[in-house]
Length: 256
Image 1 (cartoon, helix red, strand yellow):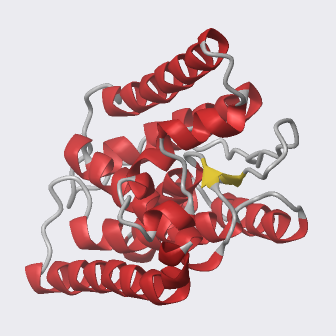
Image 2 (spheres, rainbow, N blue to C red; image 1 turned 180 degrees about the vertical axis):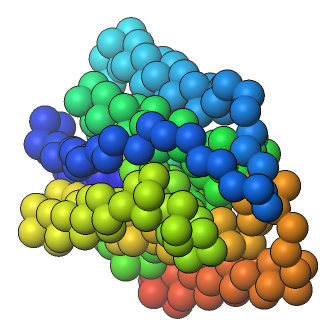
């Protein structure tokens, strides 16, 4: 998820270091979804179609990119506090330029093909959406700048792999190793150093991915349901806190 400012051409996109994690995992006490990762491919297609549509509308009606993003649902705090909470969802499908779209699509292609078999179609989609929403929520709470991008949801996929690491460390170490942690640290540090990157969206997505992965469990994984409920309660409480916090922080904007 990246910030976009008042100038029409001054945008900065966050690039991703991609790990070579295109491996399959097998373990006797949980199953792998062996079907093709068509949810990952569908999400990539949606991102591309939305970008093409946004660009086409911009060309037809001579609308600059900032206005395109605003119309299509970028995260804008002033509008969210006035009740447009749907922007927390739509922002994760918007991208600031073709380079931003390419890097996020490639990252989704790599990580999606790892996470989707581990969690299954429905759980994978839920992890992606919860992570994207939490990324937008953290950006709303802590970043004043408008923002858009799928990077919060993609960081969420990495966060869900941390759940896999916690519960199945031996397989994780053999299949992925330390690369994932290194990638996350590098990207987060880069986000703090480089202006124009909405690092709060990345942090929120990472947290959302770990929490939603813990709340859902792996594909057909059997575990105590009580633990799942606790994680869902944590997720709900974070969203409620974010909404209340935003209302108090940006409430004055309703009067402008």
